[in-house]
Length: 166
Image (cartoon, rainbow, N blue to C red; front, top):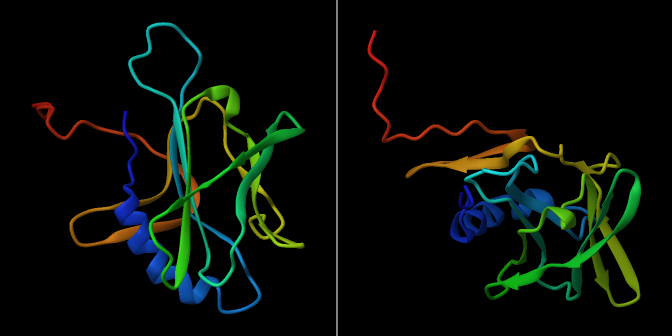
Protein backbone atom coordinates (compact mmCIF):
# COMPACT_ATOMS: atom_id res chain seq x y z
CA UNK A 1 0.00 0.00 0.00
CA UNK A 2 1.24 3.43 -0.90
CA UNK A 3 0.59 6.67 0.89
CA UNK A 4 -2.91 8.08 0.43
CA UNK A 5 -1.46 11.60 0.22
CA UNK A 6 1.20 12.94 -2.13
CA UNK A 7 3.82 15.55 -1.30
CA UNK A 8 2.23 17.86 -3.89
CA UNK A 9 -1.22 17.55 -2.29
CA UNK A 10 0.15 18.21 1.20
CA UNK A 11 2.15 21.18 -0.11
CA UNK A 12 -1.05 22.67 -1.58
CA UNK A 13 -2.86 22.04 1.72
CA UNK A 14 -0.03 23.61 3.74
CA UNK A 15 -0.01 26.76 1.61
CA UNK A 16 -3.75 27.20 2.12
CA UNK A 17 -3.58 26.53 5.88
CA UNK A 18 -0.47 28.68 6.51
CA UNK A 19 -2.18 31.98 7.32
CA UNK A 20 -4.55 30.38 9.83
CA UNK A 21 -1.79 28.27 11.41
CA UNK A 22 0.88 30.89 11.85
CA UNK A 23 -1.12 34.05 12.51
CA UNK A 24 -0.20 34.11 16.21
CA UNK A 25 2.85 32.88 18.08
CA UNK A 26 2.71 29.33 16.70
CA UNK A 27 6.00 28.30 15.08
CA UNK A 28 5.37 24.69 14.00
CA UNK A 29 2.32 22.71 12.90
CA UNK A 30 1.40 19.23 11.78
CA UNK A 31 -0.10 19.57 8.30
CA UNK A 32 -1.05 16.00 7.44
CA UNK A 33 -0.46 12.39 8.41
CA UNK A 34 -1.25 9.06 6.85
CA UNK A 35 -0.10 5.54 7.32
CA UNK A 36 -0.78 1.87 7.72
CA UNK A 37 0.00 0.11 10.98
CA UNK A 38 -1.18 -3.46 10.63
CA UNK A 39 -1.02 -6.33 13.08
CA UNK A 40 2.27 -8.27 13.17
CA UNK A 41 0.96 -11.47 11.58
CA UNK A 42 2.45 -13.58 8.83
CA UNK A 43 0.83 -13.57 5.41
CA UNK A 44 -0.03 -9.87 5.34
CA UNK A 45 0.05 -8.41 1.84
CA UNK A 46 0.17 -4.74 2.83
CA UNK A 47 3.15 -2.70 4.00
CA UNK A 48 3.45 -0.65 7.16
CA UNK A 49 4.34 3.02 6.76
CA UNK A 50 3.93 6.33 8.51
CA UNK A 51 4.12 9.68 6.73
CA UNK A 52 3.93 12.95 8.64
CA UNK A 53 4.23 16.42 7.13
CA UNK A 54 4.93 19.48 9.29
CA UNK A 55 5.39 23.16 8.46
CA UNK A 56 7.12 26.16 9.97
CA UNK A 57 7.01 29.80 8.83
CA UNK A 58 9.80 30.28 6.28
CA UNK A 59 11.73 32.71 8.50
CA UNK A 60 12.25 30.09 11.21
CA UNK A 61 15.26 27.93 10.49
CA UNK A 62 15.82 24.89 12.61
CA UNK A 63 15.55 21.17 13.02
CA UNK A 64 12.13 19.50 13.05
CA UNK A 65 11.92 16.36 15.19
CA UNK A 66 9.25 13.75 15.92
CA UNK A 67 9.42 13.21 19.67
CA UNK A 68 7.33 10.39 21.05
CA UNK A 69 7.09 6.91 22.36
CA UNK A 70 5.12 3.78 22.97
CA UNK A 71 3.45 2.46 26.06
CA UNK A 72 4.38 5.57 28.05
CA UNK A 73 8.09 5.33 27.24
CA UNK A 74 9.16 8.55 25.45
CA UNK A 75 12.23 7.22 23.68
CA UNK A 76 11.60 8.01 20.00
CA UNK A 77 13.34 11.03 18.47
CA UNK A 78 13.54 11.12 14.66
CA UNK A 79 14.37 14.13 12.45
CA UNK A 80 12.14 15.23 9.57
CA UNK A 81 13.60 16.00 6.14
CA UNK A 82 13.03 19.35 4.37
CA UNK A 83 10.64 19.07 1.43
CA UNK A 84 11.06 21.56 -1.41
CA UNK A 85 12.21 25.15 -1.29
CA UNK A 86 10.86 27.46 1.44
CA UNK A 87 8.24 29.96 0.31
CA UNK A 88 5.81 31.40 2.89
CA UNK A 89 6.35 28.18 4.81
CA UNK A 90 8.99 25.50 5.03
CA UNK A 91 7.53 22.01 4.69
CA UNK A 92 9.11 18.94 6.28
CA UNK A 93 8.34 15.24 5.87
CA UNK A 94 9.01 12.16 7.95
CA UNK A 95 8.63 8.73 6.36
CA UNK A 96 8.91 5.59 8.50
CA UNK A 97 8.45 2.00 7.38
CA UNK A 98 9.47 0.01 10.47
CA UNK A 99 6.78 -0.59 13.10
CA UNK A 100 9.34 -0.41 15.90
CA UNK A 101 9.80 3.30 15.12
CA UNK A 102 6.06 4.13 15.11
CA UNK A 103 4.97 6.07 18.22
CA UNK A 104 1.57 5.63 19.80
CA UNK A 105 1.92 9.17 21.19
CA UNK A 106 3.98 12.04 19.84
CA UNK A 107 4.60 15.76 19.47
CA UNK A 108 6.49 17.65 16.78
CA UNK A 109 9.41 19.73 18.04
CA UNK A 110 11.22 22.61 16.34
CA UNK A 111 14.72 23.34 17.61
CA UNK A 112 15.29 26.92 16.48
CA UNK A 113 18.61 28.15 17.84
CA UNK A 114 18.35 28.43 21.62
CA UNK A 115 14.54 28.20 21.49
CA UNK A 116 12.35 25.11 21.25
CA UNK A 117 8.76 25.10 20.00
CA UNK A 118 6.20 22.27 19.98
CA UNK A 119 3.04 21.24 18.20
CA UNK A 120 1.48 19.08 20.88
CA UNK A 121 -2.09 18.99 19.53
CA UNK A 122 -3.25 21.75 21.87
CA UNK A 123 -1.79 20.02 24.93
CA UNK A 124 -3.26 16.58 24.17
CA UNK A 125 -0.34 15.14 22.15
CA UNK A 126 -1.00 13.26 18.92
CA UNK A 127 -2.02 9.63 19.29
CA UNK A 128 -1.98 6.63 16.98
CA UNK A 129 -3.72 3.36 17.67
CA UNK A 130 -1.39 0.40 17.06
CA UNK A 131 -2.61 -2.13 14.51
CA UNK A 132 -5.64 -0.06 13.43
CA UNK A 133 -4.52 -0.41 9.80
CA UNK A 134 -4.95 2.63 7.56
CA UNK A 135 -5.36 6.15 8.93
CA UNK A 136 -5.19 9.64 7.49
CA UNK A 137 -5.87 13.27 8.33
CA UNK A 138 -6.80 14.32 4.79
CA UNK A 139 -8.05 13.06 1.44
CA UNK A 140 -8.27 14.52 -2.04
CA UNK A 141 -9.80 14.12 -5.45
CA UNK A 142 -9.27 16.02 -8.67
CA UNK A 143 -10.93 19.19 -7.33
CA UNK A 144 -10.78 19.26 -3.51
CA UNK A 145 -8.57 18.53 -0.55
CA UNK A 146 -10.49 17.40 2.52
CA UNK A 147 -8.78 18.21 5.83
CA UNK A 148 -10.31 16.13 8.63
CA UNK A 149 -8.61 18.11 11.46
CA UNK A 150 -7.89 14.81 13.20
CA UNK A 151 -6.37 11.41 12.52
CA UNK A 152 -9.12 9.06 11.35
CA UNK A 153 -9.17 5.34 10.64
CA UNK A 154 -9.76 4.69 6.94
CA UNK A 155 -11.37 1.72 5.20
CA UNK A 156 -10.07 1.23 1.68
CA UNK A 157 -12.07 -0.29 -1.16
CA UNK A 158 -10.68 -1.21 -4.54
CA UNK A 159 -12.56 0.95 -7.04
CA UNK A 160 -11.82 -1.49 -9.86
CA UNK A 161 -13.57 -4.40 -8.10
CA UNK A 162 -16.92 -5.31 -9.59
CA UNK A 163 -19.97 -4.28 -7.56
CA UNK A 164 -22.01 -6.98 -5.91
CA UNK A 165 -25.20 -7.75 -7.76
CA UNK A 166 -28.43 -8.14 -5.84
